[in-house]
Length: 206
Image 1 (cartoon, rainbow, N blue to C red):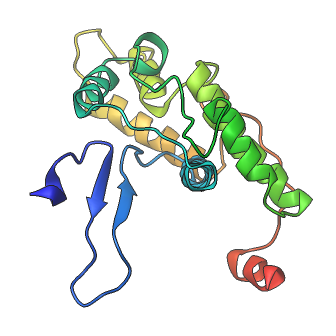
Image 2: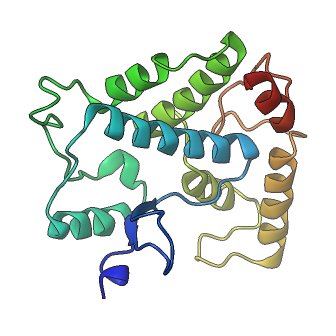
Image 3: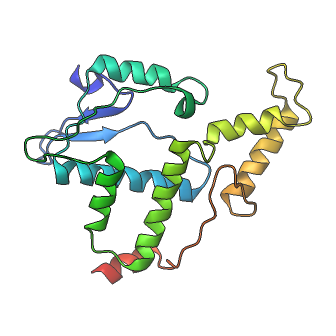
């Protein structure tokens, strides 16, 4: 069943019957984050990645066995800091010789779009968050949750997360998610001049 061969990181989506939209590729690795800013950053990152792949005709193929090994490595604690992952050293194809590193490719794809200064500022902050998470400068949500639990006064270091700890964790996450409390271990300081809502932004673009 080609529709379920490997769902861990991406999925081939065959076209629906009686449709001409063609085959699609669905990116699947990202998880829901605490804040809208983080979710927007991940969505923007994926969009820029797809644009870079199509613009530069990048070759990101690796054996499926390597993909499976990557997923196993990703399940370890603090994998982003301590695990090694399979990735192509050369992204170039015959049509795109001397392709630079992935970060440079995404920045190039980003720079080639005609965007106003406010939007560029916001997207740069999204990419800054992704870069700092990858470098370990900022904690992932999972790392921060472990940090919160293990440093909670009610935690007895016995792997038991009781109701008090759970309540305090969820309350803290709620306050962070609605900007009532800062969390510098997880999120950078953010500022943006962008004030347009989605409908106004679309209208401005058109």
